Structures are given as C-alpha cells and as structure tokens.
Amino acid sequence: MKRLMREYENLCTLGLPAREVVPLALDLLARMVGGAFFSFIWADERMEAVDVSVLNTLDDASSQQAMDIKRRYAETFYNRREAEVAPTFTELLRNRIPLINFSHPRHRLYRSAMYEEIFRPIDMKHPLRVTVIDGEHRHGMFAALRAREDRAFSEQEEQIFLHAARHLAYAFELERAGRLVHGESIEGEDAGFLLLDASGKLLHGCELGLLLFHEATRADGLAQQAAATRETLPAALAARARDARPSQEFVLSNRRGTFVFRPFLMRSASASGAAPVAVTVRRRGPVAARLWQESARFGLSPRERQIAVLLGMGSSYEDIADRIAVSRNTAVSYVRRTYEKLGVHQREQLLRQLLASTVIPDPLHPAP
Image (cartoon, rainbow, N blue to C red):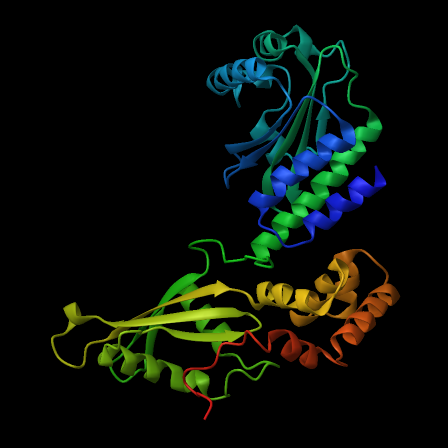
C-alpha cells in the first residue's frame, strides 16, 4: 500500500499533463482500494461536468448496461433529481464538500428513485464521491462504486481518496502554472495585442498584451535580454512588419516564458507607408518545462528535478520547503545535493547549466 501511494504521489509531481495523469491515477487508486468502477468527472469553470474518465472492471455486457444508465442519469438525475438524496455534482464543488460516502445501509439514497434506476440495475452500491479542489479552482470529482455484495468503503479508504485528491489537485496546479514536461499555456489565456505607430512607438495594448510585453523584456539572471530591449523591440517589430519578411515572428525567452511577437501592417487603416502596426503576443510556454526536461540528463532523482525547477523559477528555501512540505533544513539539504549533482554552486549557474542547449537567442542582439 505504501509503495503504491508513493508511486501515486510521484506521478502527481512529474509534470505530466492532467489528461495523462488522471487515467494512471485511477488505475493506482483501484489497486490501493479495490472496486468495480472508478471514474473522474471533469468540471468546467461553471462547475458543470464536461467529461468523464473511466476505469472500468465490468464485463462487456455490464459495461453496455452501464452506458445506458449513464445516459439516463445525465437526462434525469444529474444536477436535478439527485438533489433529493444528496448534494449534486455542482453543489459538491461549489460548497467545497470534500467527500460523501453513501455507506450506511439506511441512507435515503437506497430508498430513492435514483438508486432504483441508476445503481440497482448494474448491481452496484456503496457510491463514494471525493472532490478535487485547488484553491479557488474546482477541477472535478472522483467517483467510485462497489458491487452490492462487497463491503462499503471504510474510513481508512476514505483517507486514501482524500490524500489522492490533494495530490491530483497539485498536478492540476502544476498544469495551470505551466510547469509541465509538455507544458503550454492554457489556450487563449496568455495572448494579447499591441498597437504601434509606423515608427514603432507603442500607442496602445490590451491589458494582457502590455503585461506580456513587460514580462518578455524584463532583464533577469539569464541575461538573455539587453537592458535596452524594451526600447528597441517596438521599432524592430514595426520594421519587420514593413519589410514583410517570410518569417515575421520575434521570439524572446527568459525564465518567465517564451514570448512570440508577430507584427503586421494594418493596411486597411492607411494606404501609405505610415500604416500603424498591430502585434500579437503570446506566451508559448514557460522555461520551467524546459528545466524539467533538461534536468533528466543529469541523473537527478524526481525530487531533485523538482527542486531544480523551483530554484530556476526563483523560489527561496522557504518557498521550496512549503511547496514540497518539508522543513527548511531539509529543503536546504535537497538544494545542496541538487547543486552537487549539477556541479554548480548557485542559482544562476544552475539555470545556465540546464538551459545551455535550449536557450533561444535574442533576435534583436544576435551573437557575432
């Protein structure tokens, strides 16, 4: 059991996309607690169910029957009549209810239409629901069922589910923060626009566009941008738009991410060479993703790779200790061990070591 839980915890800190983590998490949960039917129900921003990932140990005939009952549940009971016997899916998330275990044989669920139409036909009982919540973000819910003749989920098993939900929430947090092996910013979230005049003077920008411009041109310990980049970039973008070169993209990279600027002339606004320039700017993906990938080359343990990423993102010893739930002294020991394996002595050396093969050159200041 302890080995499986440790494997589960490591899975949730490896930086894999949540869509890849959830099926593996369901498999590990089934091996830890046993049961016939496990699922994870995904939630959207409105705390409505939008998808279901299922680990099904039922036979083919029972699986087909379960599909029919799933449709009936969606049509009749989901967020409606199930409220007669228990909080609905949305209520569980909205009210931050961590767990509901319908284990008591006299629970009103077992005298309800929902039980007769949903659970009894597939010979299932003992439903368990555990929400996965990270701060203000509601990601979804674990749902588990056992056969009627099997035992109910115990208090010890409830604690396993609650522990698993906390770690899965952490995996979602990593994805939202962009700290993934294949991490990209959430589509549409990190994209904005800027408006320049013909000479490259910044006239206007949406709130996110201006923020991304600021993040992209800030100097940092990697020294990938010269101090003058903020002044020279707009003029260079305007010139690139007028030249109509085959590749109009400018790519800047620092520890806050990889920023892609794409300029184009607004010819509809002016037929002359004084046409204003519109620029789209998008954060393609944070350096943390590359830090994780590159750290695999140095024989670091999963924990040490996690420490390397946190160091690269500017975390202090206290931040690291809080993030991985250890004492400050333990965090310091992890940091020292990570430095030793990388052959460095400080944060900036660690960044240069890990990013040596992946740094994107500054197009405004090419190497000679």
